[in-house]
Image: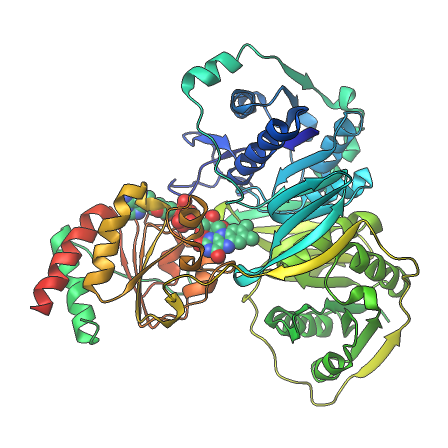
Length: 262
Length: 325
Ligand SMILES: Cc1cc2nc3c(=O)[nH]c(=O)nc-3n(C[C@H](O)[C@H](O)[C@H](O)COP(=O)(O)OP(=O)(O)OC[C@H]3O[C@@H](n4cnc5c(N)ncnc54)[C@H](O)[C@@H]3O)c2cc1C
Protein backbone atom coordinates (compact mmCIF):
# COMPACT_ATOMS: atom_id res chain seq x y z
CA UNK A 1 0.00 0.00 0.00
CA UNK A 2 1.42 3.32 -1.02
CA UNK A 3 -0.10 6.17 0.90
CA UNK A 4 0.21 9.87 0.18
CA UNK A 5 -0.63 12.25 3.00
CA UNK A 6 -1.23 15.93 2.33
CA UNK A 7 -0.30 18.18 5.23
CA UNK A 8 -0.38 21.90 6.00
CA UNK A 9 1.80 24.01 8.23
CA UNK A 10 -0.53 26.31 10.17
CA UNK A 11 -0.33 28.83 13.03
CA UNK A 12 -1.62 27.81 16.43
CA UNK A 13 -4.19 30.45 17.16
CA UNK A 14 -6.49 29.15 19.91
CA UNK A 15 -4.57 30.95 22.64
CA UNK A 16 -2.90 33.64 20.55
CA UNK A 17 -3.76 37.32 20.45
CA UNK A 18 -4.33 37.65 16.70
CA UNK A 19 -3.55 40.92 14.93
CA UNK A 20 -4.87 41.74 11.49
CA UNK A 21 -2.46 43.50 9.11
CA UNK A 22 -3.07 47.18 8.30
CA UNK A 23 -4.48 46.31 4.87
CA UNK A 24 -7.02 43.99 6.50
CA UNK A 25 -6.15 41.08 4.26
CA UNK A 26 -4.36 38.63 6.57
CA UNK A 27 -3.23 38.13 10.15
CA UNK A 28 0.22 39.18 11.31
CA UNK A 29 2.17 35.95 11.49
CA UNK A 30 5.14 37.16 13.51
CA UNK A 31 5.19 35.73 17.00
CA UNK A 32 2.85 32.88 16.17
CA UNK A 33 3.91 29.29 16.65
CA UNK A 34 3.34 27.07 13.60
CA UNK A 35 2.82 23.33 13.57
CA UNK A 36 1.20 20.57 11.53
CA UNK A 37 -2.56 21.18 11.12
CA UNK A 38 -4.40 19.22 13.83
CA UNK A 39 -6.48 17.19 11.34
CA UNK A 40 -3.40 16.39 9.25
CA UNK A 41 -1.70 15.06 12.36
CA UNK A 42 -4.36 12.33 12.53
CA UNK A 43 -4.11 11.76 8.76
CA UNK A 44 -0.35 11.30 9.09
CA UNK A 45 -0.78 8.78 11.90
CA UNK A 46 -3.36 6.87 9.86
CA UNK A 47 -0.98 6.80 6.87
CA UNK A 48 1.84 5.42 8.99
CA UNK A 49 -0.44 2.80 10.55
CA UNK A 50 -1.53 1.65 7.08
CA UNK A 51 2.11 1.34 6.06
CA UNK A 52 2.93 -0.63 9.18
CA UNK A 53 0.06 -3.00 8.56
CA UNK A 54 0.30 -3.53 4.81
CA UNK A 55 3.87 -2.48 4.03
CA UNK A 56 4.51 0.03 1.26
CA UNK A 57 5.43 3.68 1.63
CA UNK A 58 4.20 6.99 2.96
CA UNK A 59 4.86 10.20 1.08
CA UNK A 60 4.09 13.47 2.86
CA UNK A 61 3.39 16.42 0.62
CA UNK A 62 2.71 20.06 1.39
CA UNK A 63 2.21 23.35 -0.40
CA UNK A 64 4.02 25.95 1.64
CA UNK A 65 7.06 28.12 2.31
CA UNK A 66 10.41 26.96 3.62
CA UNK A 67 9.21 27.11 7.23
CA UNK A 68 6.82 24.27 6.38
CA UNK A 69 9.87 22.00 6.31
CA UNK A 70 9.51 21.62 10.06
CA UNK A 71 6.09 20.02 9.52
CA UNK A 72 7.57 17.76 6.85
CA UNK A 73 10.39 16.78 9.21
CA UNK A 74 7.78 15.83 11.76
CA UNK A 75 6.15 13.61 9.10
CA UNK A 76 9.49 11.97 8.29
CA UNK A 77 10.27 11.44 11.97
CA UNK A 78 6.86 9.83 12.48
CA UNK A 79 7.38 7.34 9.68
CA UNK A 80 6.97 8.99 6.27
CA UNK A 81 9.51 7.71 3.76
CA UNK A 82 9.61 10.76 1.60
CA UNK A 83 8.61 14.42 1.78
CA UNK A 84 7.75 16.86 -0.98
CA UNK A 85 7.26 20.59 -0.64
CA UNK A 86 5.61 22.56 -3.41
CA UNK A 87 6.47 26.21 -3.26
CA UNK A 88 6.49 29.26 -5.45
CA UNK A 89 5.79 32.95 -4.87
CA UNK A 90 3.02 32.54 -7.45
CA UNK A 91 1.20 30.07 -5.16
CA UNK A 92 0.47 32.93 -2.75
CA UNK A 93 -3.27 33.55 -2.35
CA UNK A 94 -4.28 30.03 -3.45
CA UNK A 95 -7.62 28.81 -2.10
CA UNK A 96 -8.40 25.11 -1.67
CA UNK A 97 -9.14 24.77 -5.40
CA UNK A 98 -5.80 26.24 -6.51
CA UNK A 99 -3.99 24.28 -3.78
CA UNK A 100 -5.64 21.04 -4.88
CA UNK A 101 -4.61 21.74 -8.48
CA UNK A 102 -1.00 22.17 -7.39
CA UNK A 103 -1.13 18.93 -5.37
CA UNK A 104 -2.88 17.13 -8.20
CA UNK A 105 -0.26 17.94 -10.79
CA UNK A 106 2.43 16.29 -8.70
CA UNK A 107 0.43 13.45 -7.15
CA UNK A 108 -0.92 12.22 -10.49
CA UNK A 109 2.56 10.98 -11.40
CA UNK A 110 3.25 9.26 -8.06
CA UNK A 111 2.29 5.70 -7.15
CA UNK A 112 -0.53 5.51 -4.59
CA UNK A 113 -3.40 3.35 -3.36
CA UNK A 114 -4.75 5.76 -0.80
CA UNK A 115 -4.46 9.52 -0.36
CA UNK A 116 -5.18 11.03 3.04
CA UNK A 117 -5.79 14.65 3.94
CA UNK A 118 -7.12 16.33 7.05
CA UNK A 119 -10.87 17.03 7.05
CA UNK A 120 -10.05 20.72 7.17
CA UNK A 121 -7.25 23.15 7.90
CA UNK A 122 -7.59 25.06 11.15
CA UNK A 123 -6.57 28.35 9.52
CA UNK A 124 -8.92 28.83 6.55
CA UNK A 125 -11.41 26.08 7.42
CA UNK A 126 -12.33 25.46 3.77
CA UNK A 127 -12.66 21.66 4.25
CA UNK A 128 -12.52 21.13 0.49
CA UNK A 129 -8.99 20.30 -0.72
CA UNK A 130 -9.35 16.51 -0.29
CA UNK A 131 -12.53 15.96 -2.31
CA UNK A 132 -11.40 18.51 -4.93
CA UNK A 133 -8.16 16.58 -5.34
CA UNK A 134 -10.14 13.35 -5.72
CA UNK A 135 -12.31 14.84 -8.44
CA UNK A 136 -9.26 16.17 -10.30
CA UNK A 137 -7.72 12.70 -10.13
CA UNK A 138 -11.01 11.12 -11.20
CA UNK A 139 -11.19 8.85 -8.13
CA UNK A 140 -13.77 8.56 -5.33
CA UNK A 141 -13.46 10.18 -1.93
CA UNK A 142 -14.95 10.13 1.52
CA UNK A 143 -14.77 13.04 3.95
CA UNK A 144 -14.98 13.17 7.77
CA UNK A 145 -13.52 9.68 8.03
CA UNK A 146 -13.35 8.13 11.52
CA UNK A 147 -12.31 4.57 10.61
CA UNK A 148 -10.68 2.86 7.61
CA UNK A 149 -10.57 -0.88 6.89
CA UNK A 150 -8.76 -1.76 3.70
CA UNK A 151 -10.09 -4.87 1.96
CA UNK A 152 -8.33 -5.31 -1.36
CA UNK A 153 -10.05 -3.18 -3.99
CA UNK A 154 -12.35 -1.51 -1.48
CA UNK A 155 -12.09 0.34 1.76
CA UNK A 156 -14.85 0.16 4.33
CA UNK A 157 -14.91 3.53 6.04
CA UNK A 158 -16.93 5.18 8.79
CA UNK A 159 -17.91 8.76 8.07
CA UNK A 160 -18.89 11.00 10.93
CA UNK A 161 -22.31 12.61 10.60
CA UNK A 162 -23.92 14.94 13.11
CA UNK A 163 -24.83 14.17 16.71
CA UNK A 164 -22.48 11.20 17.12
CA UNK A 165 -24.03 9.21 14.28
CA UNK A 166 -21.71 7.55 11.75
CA UNK A 167 -22.35 6.00 8.36
CA UNK A 168 -20.46 2.99 7.09
CA UNK A 169 -19.71 3.02 3.36
CA UNK A 170 -17.63 1.02 0.90
CA UNK A 171 -15.36 3.06 -1.34
CA UNK A 172 -13.47 1.74 -4.34
CA UNK A 173 -9.69 2.21 -4.24
CA UNK A 174 -7.68 4.21 -5.07
CA UNK A 175 -9.49 6.93 -3.18
CA UNK A 176 -8.98 10.10 -1.19
CA UNK A 177 -10.04 10.09 2.46
CA UNK A 178 -10.19 13.24 4.51
CA UNK A 179 -9.63 12.39 8.12
CA UNK A 180 -11.54 13.61 11.16
CA UNK A 181 -9.80 14.05 14.52
CA UNK A 182 -10.03 11.18 16.99
CA UNK A 183 -9.60 8.43 14.38
CA UNK A 184 -6.39 7.28 16.11
CA UNK A 185 -3.83 8.39 18.67
CA UNK A 186 -1.05 10.30 16.94
CA UNK A 187 2.26 8.99 18.22
CA UNK A 188 4.74 11.10 20.07
CA UNK A 189 8.13 11.76 18.50
CA UNK A 190 11.13 12.96 20.37
CA UNK A 191 13.18 16.00 19.40
CA UNK A 192 15.94 13.47 18.67
CA UNK A 193 13.69 11.69 16.23
CA UNK A 194 12.94 14.97 14.47
CA UNK A 195 16.65 15.83 14.37
CA UNK A 196 17.41 12.47 12.82
CA UNK A 197 14.75 13.04 10.20
CA UNK A 198 16.63 16.16 9.15
CA UNK A 199 19.03 13.87 7.35
CA UNK A 200 16.23 12.61 5.13
CA UNK A 201 15.79 14.60 2.00
CA UNK A 202 12.87 16.85 1.15
CA UNK A 203 12.12 17.36 -2.50
CA UNK A 204 11.23 20.97 -3.35
CA UNK A 205 9.33 21.81 -6.53
CA UNK A 206 8.27 25.18 -7.95
CA UNK A 207 5.65 26.32 -10.44
CA UNK A 208 7.55 25.18 -13.55
CA UNK A 209 8.32 21.73 -12.13
CA UNK A 210 4.74 21.32 -10.98
CA UNK A 211 3.77 22.05 -14.56
CA UNK A 212 1.02 24.61 -14.08
CA UNK A 213 0.76 28.06 -15.57
CA UNK A 214 0.67 31.24 -13.48
CA UNK A 215 -3.03 31.85 -13.99
CA UNK A 216 -3.94 28.38 -12.70
CA UNK A 217 -2.52 29.08 -9.24
CA UNK A 218 -2.59 31.82 -6.61
CA UNK A 219 -5.41 34.32 -6.61
CA UNK A 220 -6.04 34.09 -10.36
CA UNK A 221 -6.40 30.33 -10.19
CA UNK A 222 -8.69 30.44 -7.15
CA UNK A 223 -12.43 30.51 -6.81
CA UNK A 224 -12.46 32.73 -3.78
CA UNK A 225 -10.52 35.80 -2.79
CA UNK A 226 -10.19 37.56 0.56
CA UNK A 227 -11.37 41.16 0.40
CA UNK A 228 -11.39 42.14 4.01
CA UNK A 229 -10.54 40.52 7.31
CA UNK A 230 -11.90 41.92 10.56
CA UNK A 231 -12.65 41.05 14.15
CA UNK A 232 -16.17 39.57 14.33
CA UNK A 233 -18.70 42.15 15.52
CA UNK A 234 -19.81 41.52 19.09
CA UNK A 235 -23.50 40.75 19.18
CA UNK A 236 -23.62 39.85 22.80
CA UNK A 237 -20.77 39.99 25.27
CA UNK A 238 -20.48 38.26 28.61
CA UNK A 239 -20.49 40.37 31.73
CA UNK A 240 -16.93 40.01 32.94
CA UNK A 241 -16.24 39.20 36.58
CA UNK A 242 -13.01 40.71 37.83
CA UNK A 243 -10.91 40.45 40.96
CA UNK A 244 -8.61 37.97 42.65
CA UNK A 245 -9.49 34.30 41.99
CA UNK A 246 -11.19 33.94 45.39
CA UNK A 247 -13.25 37.08 44.78
CA UNK A 248 -14.28 35.83 41.37
CA UNK A 249 -15.17 32.44 42.82
CA UNK A 250 -17.27 34.17 45.49
CA UNK A 251 -19.05 36.22 42.81
CA UNK A 252 -19.83 33.09 40.79
CA UNK A 253 -21.05 31.30 43.92
CA UNK A 254 -23.36 34.25 44.68
CA UNK A 255 -24.78 34.17 41.16
CA UNK A 256 -25.39 30.44 41.45
CA UNK A 257 -27.03 30.90 44.84
CA UNK A 258 -29.31 33.68 43.63
CA UNK A 259 -30.46 31.38 40.85
CA UNK A 260 -31.06 28.49 43.19
CA UNK A 261 -28.28 26.43 41.67
CA UNK A 262 -26.55 25.67 44.98
CA UNK B 1 -35.56 32.39 -15.33
CA UNK B 2 -32.50 31.61 -13.25
CA UNK B 3 -33.23 30.10 -9.88
CA UNK B 4 -31.61 29.82 -6.49
CA UNK B 5 -31.44 26.19 -5.42
CA UNK B 6 -31.52 24.83 -1.91
CA UNK B 7 -30.50 21.19 -1.66
CA UNK B 8 -32.73 19.37 0.80
CA UNK B 9 -30.84 17.49 3.48
CA UNK B 10 -32.71 14.55 4.91
CA UNK B 11 -31.67 11.54 6.90
CA UNK B 12 -33.42 8.64 8.58
CA UNK B 13 -36.91 9.86 7.80
CA UNK B 14 -36.43 13.53 8.60
CA UNK B 15 -35.77 16.75 6.75
CA UNK B 16 -32.91 18.32 8.67
CA UNK B 17 -33.17 21.84 10.17
CA UNK B 18 -30.43 23.23 7.94
CA UNK B 19 -32.78 22.84 4.97
CA UNK B 20 -35.31 25.29 6.45
CA UNK B 21 -32.52 27.67 7.46
CA UNK B 22 -31.23 27.68 3.87
CA UNK B 23 -34.74 28.11 2.48
CA UNK B 24 -35.13 31.27 4.59
CA UNK B 25 -31.80 32.69 3.45
CA UNK B 26 -32.40 31.47 -0.10
CA UNK B 27 -35.73 33.29 -0.25
CA UNK B 28 -34.08 36.53 0.85
CA UNK B 29 -31.35 36.12 -1.80
CA UNK B 30 -33.87 35.23 -4.48
CA UNK B 31 -35.94 38.33 -3.72
CA UNK B 32 -32.86 40.55 -3.83
CA UNK B 33 -31.70 39.02 -7.13
CA UNK B 34 -35.25 38.97 -8.57
CA UNK B 35 -35.07 35.23 -9.15
CA UNK B 36 -37.04 32.29 -7.82
CA UNK B 37 -36.30 29.93 -4.99
CA UNK B 38 -36.41 26.20 -5.65
CA UNK B 39 -35.84 23.34 -3.23
CA UNK B 40 -34.07 20.37 -4.81
CA UNK B 41 -35.04 17.05 -3.32
CA UNK B 42 -33.26 13.79 -4.13
CA UNK B 43 -34.35 10.51 -2.59
CA UNK B 44 -36.52 7.49 -2.93
CA UNK B 45 -40.21 7.70 -1.91
CA UNK B 46 -39.94 11.30 -0.81
CA UNK B 47 -43.28 12.72 -1.98
CA UNK B 48 -44.15 13.55 1.64
CA UNK B 49 -41.05 15.69 1.94
CA UNK B 50 -41.89 17.44 -1.33
CA UNK B 51 -45.22 18.45 0.11
CA UNK B 52 -43.63 19.90 3.23
CA UNK B 53 -41.02 21.77 1.20
CA UNK B 54 -43.61 23.22 -1.16
CA UNK B 55 -44.95 25.22 1.79
CA UNK B 56 -41.68 27.13 1.95
CA UNK B 57 -40.73 27.70 -1.65
CA UNK B 58 -41.90 28.58 -5.12
CA UNK B 59 -40.88 25.25 -6.57
CA UNK B 60 -39.69 21.82 -5.49
CA UNK B 61 -37.63 19.83 -7.98
CA UNK B 62 -37.89 16.16 -7.10
CA UNK B 63 -35.78 13.30 -8.38
CA UNK B 64 -36.69 9.86 -7.13
CA UNK B 65 -34.52 6.82 -7.64
CA UNK B 66 -33.84 3.76 -5.48
CA UNK B 67 -30.14 4.64 -5.72
CA UNK B 68 -30.85 7.96 -3.99
CA UNK B 69 -32.37 6.42 -0.89
CA UNK B 70 -29.39 7.14 1.33
CA UNK B 71 -27.02 10.02 0.79
CA UNK B 72 -24.10 9.06 -1.46
CA UNK B 73 -21.89 11.78 -2.93
CA UNK B 74 -21.40 9.78 -6.14
CA UNK B 75 -25.08 9.38 -7.01
CA UNK B 76 -26.04 12.80 -5.67
CA UNK B 77 -23.25 14.45 -7.64
CA UNK B 78 -24.35 12.90 -10.91
CA UNK B 79 -27.97 13.86 -10.47
CA UNK B 80 -27.26 17.39 -9.26
CA UNK B 81 -24.72 18.02 -12.01
CA UNK B 82 -27.34 17.14 -14.57
CA UNK B 83 -29.98 19.43 -13.02
CA UNK B 84 -27.54 22.32 -12.61
CA UNK B 85 -26.33 21.99 -16.21
CA UNK B 86 -29.89 22.02 -17.43
CA UNK B 87 -31.35 24.84 -15.31
CA UNK B 88 -28.20 26.90 -14.60
CA UNK B 89 -29.20 28.22 -11.18
CA UNK B 90 -27.53 31.41 -10.03
CA UNK B 91 -26.57 29.68 -6.81
CA UNK B 92 -26.96 26.27 -5.19
CA UNK B 93 -26.97 26.23 -1.39
CA UNK B 94 -26.24 23.14 0.66
CA UNK B 95 -25.45 22.61 4.32
CA UNK B 96 -21.90 22.89 5.59
CA UNK B 97 -22.59 19.53 7.14
CA UNK B 98 -21.17 16.07 6.72
CA UNK B 99 -23.53 15.71 3.75
CA UNK B 100 -22.66 19.01 2.03
CA UNK B 101 -18.94 18.67 2.77
CA UNK B 102 -18.85 15.34 0.97
CA UNK B 103 -20.71 16.63 -2.05
CA UNK B 104 -20.06 20.31 -2.77
CA UNK B 105 -16.31 20.34 -3.55
CA UNK B 106 -16.26 17.55 -6.13
CA UNK B 107 -19.53 18.75 -7.67
CA UNK B 108 -18.06 22.24 -8.11
CA UNK B 109 -14.98 20.82 -9.83
CA UNK B 110 -17.04 18.60 -12.11
CA UNK B 111 -19.16 21.58 -13.21
CA UNK B 112 -16.24 23.98 -13.18
CA UNK B 113 -18.13 26.50 -11.04
CA UNK B 114 -16.81 28.36 -7.98
CA UNK B 115 -17.51 27.16 -4.46
CA UNK B 116 -17.48 28.94 -1.11
CA UNK B 117 -17.66 26.76 1.99
CA UNK B 118 -18.87 27.42 5.54
CA UNK B 119 -20.62 30.67 4.68
CA UNK B 120 -22.17 32.72 7.47
CA UNK B 121 -23.49 35.29 5.01
CA UNK B 122 -23.96 35.47 1.24
CA UNK B 123 -24.94 38.11 -1.30
CA UNK B 124 -24.33 39.29 -4.82
CA UNK B 125 -22.34 42.30 -6.04
CA UNK B 126 -22.36 43.04 -9.76
CA UNK B 127 -23.54 39.47 -10.38
CA UNK B 128 -20.60 37.96 -8.50
CA UNK B 129 -21.15 36.04 -5.27
CA UNK B 130 -19.84 37.60 -2.06
CA UNK B 131 -19.66 35.62 1.16
CA UNK B 132 -18.64 36.08 4.77
CA UNK B 133 -16.68 33.23 6.35
CA UNK B 134 -14.71 32.75 9.52
CA UNK B 135 -11.09 31.79 9.95
CA UNK B 136 -8.84 30.74 12.82
CA UNK B 137 -11.53 29.04 14.86
CA UNK B 138 -13.91 32.01 14.68
CA UNK B 139 -11.38 34.63 15.77
CA UNK B 140 -11.67 36.60 12.53
CA UNK B 141 -14.33 37.17 9.90
CA UNK B 142 -13.46 37.44 6.22
CA UNK B 143 -15.48 39.07 3.47
CA UNK B 144 -14.74 37.23 0.24
CA UNK B 145 -15.47 37.78 -3.42
CA UNK B 146 -15.87 34.83 -5.78
CA UNK B 147 -14.66 34.69 -9.31
CA UNK B 148 -17.30 35.80 -11.83
CA UNK B 149 -19.34 32.85 -13.04
CA UNK B 150 -22.80 31.92 -14.27
CA UNK B 151 -23.49 29.63 -11.36
CA UNK B 152 -22.11 29.18 -7.83
CA UNK B 153 -22.22 26.69 -4.99
CA UNK B 154 -22.18 27.74 -1.35
CA UNK B 155 -22.20 25.60 1.78
CA UNK B 156 -23.97 27.25 4.69
CA UNK B 157 -23.07 26.98 8.36
CA UNK B 158 -25.73 25.37 10.55
CA UNK B 159 -27.85 27.43 12.95
CA UNK B 160 -26.65 30.68 11.36
CA UNK B 161 -29.86 31.77 9.64
CA UNK B 162 -33.17 31.42 11.45
CA UNK B 163 -35.62 29.05 9.78
CA UNK B 164 -38.28 30.99 7.92
CA UNK B 165 -42.04 30.99 7.91
CA UNK B 166 -44.17 29.18 5.39
CA UNK B 167 -45.00 30.96 2.14
CA UNK B 168 -48.52 32.34 1.72
CA UNK B 169 -49.12 29.94 -1.16
CA UNK B 170 -47.76 26.47 -1.86
CA UNK B 171 -45.13 26.07 -4.54
CA UNK B 172 -45.34 23.69 -7.47
CA UNK B 173 -43.82 20.22 -7.32
CA UNK B 174 -41.86 19.34 -10.46
CA UNK B 175 -40.81 15.74 -10.95
CA UNK B 176 -37.59 15.18 -12.85
CA UNK B 177 -36.64 11.80 -14.28
CA UNK B 178 -33.53 10.37 -12.66
CA UNK B 179 -30.53 10.60 -14.97
CA UNK B 180 -28.96 7.55 -13.28
CA UNK B 181 -29.00 4.52 -15.51
CA UNK B 182 -26.24 2.18 -14.37
CA UNK B 183 -25.63 1.13 -10.82
CA UNK B 184 -23.00 3.32 -9.16
CA UNK B 185 -20.33 1.11 -7.60
CA UNK B 186 -17.56 3.53 -6.60
CA UNK B 187 -19.26 4.19 -3.31
CA UNK B 188 -21.90 2.15 -1.51
CA UNK B 189 -23.86 2.92 1.62
CA UNK B 190 -23.72 0.05 4.11
CA UNK B 191 -25.38 1.19 7.32
CA UNK B 192 -25.65 3.76 10.08
CA UNK B 193 -23.96 3.18 13.42
CA UNK B 194 -24.48 4.96 16.71
CA UNK B 195 -21.93 4.67 19.50
CA UNK B 196 -23.31 2.58 22.39
CA UNK B 197 -24.84 4.73 25.15
CA UNK B 198 -22.58 5.33 28.12
CA UNK B 199 -23.21 5.74 31.82
CA UNK B 200 -24.02 9.45 32.05
CA UNK B 201 -26.64 11.23 30.00
CA UNK B 202 -25.40 14.83 29.79
CA UNK B 203 -28.58 15.89 28.02
CA UNK B 204 -30.54 15.10 31.18
CA UNK B 205 -28.23 16.83 33.66
CA UNK B 206 -29.03 20.24 35.18
CA UNK B 207 -25.47 21.31 35.78
CA UNK B 208 -22.59 20.68 33.40
CA UNK B 209 -18.94 21.56 33.76
CA UNK B 210 -17.58 21.63 30.23
CA UNK B 211 -13.85 21.20 29.97
CA UNK B 212 -11.75 21.99 26.91
CA UNK B 213 -8.19 21.75 25.73
CA UNK B 214 -7.26 24.37 28.34
CA UNK B 215 -7.40 21.59 30.93
CA UNK B 216 -4.03 20.61 29.42
CA UNK B 217 -3.57 17.18 30.95
CA UNK B 218 -5.60 14.11 31.75
CA UNK B 219 -4.37 14.27 35.34
CA UNK B 220 -6.37 17.49 35.84
CA UNK B 221 -9.68 15.85 35.04
CA UNK B 222 -10.40 14.61 38.60
CA UNK B 223 -10.32 18.18 39.98
CA UNK B 224 -12.85 19.26 37.34
CA UNK B 225 -14.91 16.21 38.25
CA UNK B 226 -14.84 17.30 41.91
CA UNK B 227 -16.18 20.73 41.00
CA UNK B 228 -18.95 19.07 38.99
CA UNK B 229 -19.78 16.86 41.98
CA UNK B 230 -19.83 19.82 44.37
CA UNK B 231 -22.43 21.42 42.10
CA UNK B 232 -24.39 18.20 41.77
CA UNK B 233 -23.60 18.04 38.09
CA UNK B 234 -21.57 16.10 35.57
CA UNK B 235 -18.52 16.63 33.39
CA UNK B 236 -18.99 17.41 29.71
CA UNK B 237 -16.31 18.47 27.26
CA UNK B 238 -15.22 19.81 23.90
CA UNK B 239 -14.12 17.50 21.13
CA UNK B 240 -10.33 17.40 21.71
CA UNK B 241 -10.92 15.84 25.16
CA UNK B 242 -12.81 12.94 23.55
CA UNK B 243 -10.29 12.71 20.69
CA UNK B 244 -7.54 12.23 23.24
CA UNK B 245 -9.58 9.57 24.99
CA UNK B 246 -9.73 11.48 28.29
CA UNK B 247 -13.51 11.29 28.48
CA UNK B 248 -15.93 8.96 26.69
CA UNK B 249 -17.73 9.97 23.45
CA UNK B 250 -21.05 10.63 25.12
CA UNK B 251 -19.60 13.56 27.12
CA UNK B 252 -18.89 15.59 24.00
CA UNK B 253 -20.97 18.72 23.48
CA UNK B 254 -21.39 20.13 19.99
CA UNK B 255 -22.42 19.49 16.42
CA UNK B 256 -20.83 16.06 16.32
CA UNK B 257 -21.71 15.35 19.94
CA UNK B 258 -24.65 16.14 22.18
CA UNK B 259 -26.89 19.18 22.25
CA UNK B 260 -27.40 20.18 25.87
CA UNK B 261 -29.66 22.70 27.62
CA UNK B 262 -28.70 22.52 31.29
CA UNK B 263 -29.64 25.14 33.88
CA UNK B 264 -25.93 25.89 34.23
CA UNK B 265 -23.00 25.32 31.86
CA UNK B 266 -19.55 26.32 33.06
CA UNK B 267 -17.00 26.25 30.21
CA UNK B 268 -13.43 25.85 31.44
CA UNK B 269 -10.68 26.34 28.85
CA UNK B 270 -12.99 26.04 25.85
CA UNK B 271 -12.33 28.52 23.02
CA UNK B 272 -15.88 28.45 21.65
CA UNK B 273 -15.58 27.04 18.13
CA UNK B 274 -18.98 27.21 16.45
CA UNK B 275 -19.25 23.40 16.46
CA UNK B 276 -19.07 23.51 20.25
CA UNK B 277 -21.36 26.52 20.63
CA UNK B 278 -24.04 24.80 18.53
CA UNK B 279 -24.35 22.21 21.28
CA UNK B 280 -24.60 24.44 24.37
CA UNK B 281 -25.75 27.94 23.46
CA UNK B 282 -29.29 27.31 24.69
CA UNK B 283 -28.19 26.58 28.24
CA UNK B 284 -30.05 28.75 30.79
CA UNK B 285 -26.90 30.20 32.31
CA UNK B 286 -23.43 30.08 30.78
CA UNK B 287 -20.27 30.99 32.64
CA UNK B 288 -16.96 30.83 30.76
CA UNK B 289 -13.45 30.81 32.16
CA UNK B 290 -10.71 31.39 29.62
CA UNK B 291 -7.41 33.18 29.84
CA UNK B 292 -7.85 34.69 26.38
CA UNK B 293 -10.17 37.73 26.58
CA UNK B 294 -10.90 37.39 22.86
CA UNK B 295 -12.03 33.76 23.01
CA UNK B 296 -15.30 33.44 21.03
CA UNK B 297 -16.91 31.58 23.97
CA UNK B 298 -17.41 34.99 25.64
CA UNK B 299 -19.83 35.83 22.85
CA UNK B 300 -22.35 33.27 24.13
CA UNK B 301 -21.56 33.34 27.85
CA UNK B 302 -23.66 35.33 30.32
CA UNK B 303 -20.68 35.75 32.63
CA UNK B 304 -17.04 35.67 31.66
CA UNK B 305 -13.86 35.24 33.65
CA UNK B 306 -10.53 36.05 32.03
CA UNK B 307 -8.25 34.02 34.25
CA UNK B 308 -6.31 30.80 34.54
CA UNK B 309 -8.89 28.06 35.04
CA UNK B 310 -6.62 26.29 37.54
CA UNK B 311 -6.93 29.29 39.85
CA UNK B 312 -10.72 29.45 39.58
CA UNK B 313 -11.58 25.76 39.74
CA UNK B 314 -10.39 25.05 43.32
CA UNK B 315 -11.63 28.36 44.76
CA UNK B 316 -15.04 27.89 43.21
CA UNK B 317 -15.27 24.38 44.55
CA UNK B 318 -14.55 25.49 48.12
CA UNK B 319 -16.95 28.47 47.86
CA UNK B 320 -19.71 26.17 46.65
CA UNK B 321 -19.01 23.68 49.44
CA UNK B 322 -19.10 26.52 52.00
CA UNK B 323 -22.47 27.62 50.71
CA UNK B 324 -23.86 24.13 50.94
CA UNK B 325 -22.95 23.84 54.61
C1 LIG C 1 -16.92 18.56 11.49
C2 LIG C 1 -16.45 18.99 12.84
C3 LIG C 1 -17.21 18.69 13.94
C4 LIG C 1 -16.82 19.12 15.19
N1 LIG C 1 -17.61 18.83 16.25
C5 LIG C 1 -17.29 19.32 17.45
C6 LIG C 1 -18.14 19.10 18.58
O1 LIG C 1 -19.18 18.44 18.50
N2 LIG C 1 -17.77 19.63 19.76
C7 LIG C 1 -16.62 20.37 19.92
O2 LIG C 1 -16.36 20.83 21.04
N3 LIG C 1 -15.79 20.57 18.89
C8 LIG C 1 -16.10 20.06 17.66
N4 LIG C 1 -15.23 20.27 16.63
C9 LIG C 1 -13.90 20.85 16.88
C10 LIG C 1 -13.91 22.36 16.99
O3 LIG C 1 -13.75 22.92 15.71
C11 LIG C 1 -12.74 22.85 17.87
O4 LIG C 1 -11.53 22.35 17.34
C12 LIG C 1 -12.87 22.42 19.32
O5 LIG C 1 -14.16 22.71 19.81
C13 LIG C 1 -11.85 23.13 20.15
O6 LIG C 1 -11.90 22.65 21.47
P1 LIG C 1 -11.38 23.53 22.67
O7 LIG C 1 -12.11 24.81 22.73
O8 LIG C 1 -11.39 22.67 23.87
O9 LIG C 1 -9.84 23.77 22.29
P2 LIG C 1 -9.08 25.05 21.76
O10 LIG C 1 -9.78 25.67 20.64
O11 LIG C 1 -7.67 24.66 21.61
O12 LIG C 1 -9.21 26.08 22.97
C14 LIG C 1 -8.60 25.93 24.20
C15 LIG C 1 -8.94 27.19 25.01
O13 LIG C 1 -8.45 27.06 26.32
C16 LIG C 1 -7.94 28.29 26.77
N5 LIG C 1 -6.98 27.99 27.82
C17 LIG C 1 -5.80 27.34 27.72
N6 LIG C 1 -5.23 27.20 28.92
C18 LIG C 1 -6.06 27.79 29.82
C19 LIG C 1 -5.99 27.99 31.22
N7 LIG C 1 -4.99 27.53 31.96
N8 LIG C 1 -7.02 28.65 31.79
C20 LIG C 1 -8.05 29.12 31.06
N9 LIG C 1 -8.15 28.96 29.74
C21 LIG C 1 -7.17 28.31 29.11
C22 LIG C 1 -7.35 28.91 25.54
O14 LIG C 1 -7.27 30.31 25.64
C23 LIG C 1 -8.32 28.46 24.44
O15 LIG C 1 -9.34 29.42 24.22
C24 LIG C 1 -15.61 19.84 15.35
C25 LIG C 1 -14.84 20.11 14.25
C26 LIG C 1 -15.24 19.70 13.00
C27 LIG C 1 -14.40 20.03 11.83
